[in-house]
Length: 188
Length: 119
Image (cartoon, rainbow over all chains, first blue to last red; front, side, top):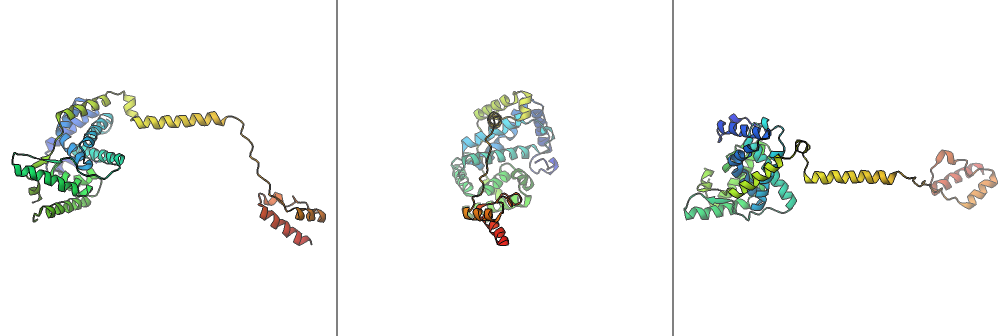
């Protein structure tokens, strides 16, 4: 989980990483105020991943709470985390799987995963359709696509978060995107 | 680019109310005593520890009295064969020390073997 250097991150600046490292280390020292900073920086990504993975808003909220409660409890080693975002997303990934195991049912995305960023009515329709198509992807592919596009992770980081080799993460992403393209009728 | 697929959309975001709830729960967890956090106790951990303690106490409470002695059943004997062995002066227990435990079938076979040698 901590095997990726900040220098390898493509979409997050080193300053961002350093800031998160400082916040995580502060949580490790028992400074609860730093939890808010972590939430503001990563809460949306963690929530989105949990929703993508569990398919239900209530479960995603539970996952998000579980991640932060675990963070507050397990202080040891937080100061040594080299890639805080991957670390937190990995926690959300595992917490989501725990929720699914407890629920013991197949994920069906019955909640809106995406929303339009503007007021363009076409995009609103697309957001609903895209969310539905994402929901039809296998769990692992959906997660890889989501982590790549919305959390901005590299394939190495996706592999780190989902505990699979980088090649597997990339393969899942490509299969997911290819399937989405086919369903949308978009040429590669 | 596959980025085009997701142009104009974004994931839904957690509400401010959820932020407050999550951070409140995390702060409560952070305020637990240091020894509690160090042990990493959670509800099910306590249930597990409690169950183990109950089992240990129950084992000690029920295991301290005298236990009944378990007696192994001796193999049944073929009465005619025993009588014949007595007539021949062969002790029916002569071979048991070496071959116990023996089953009924095994005992009969051994007796038969001894008789074959004697007769």
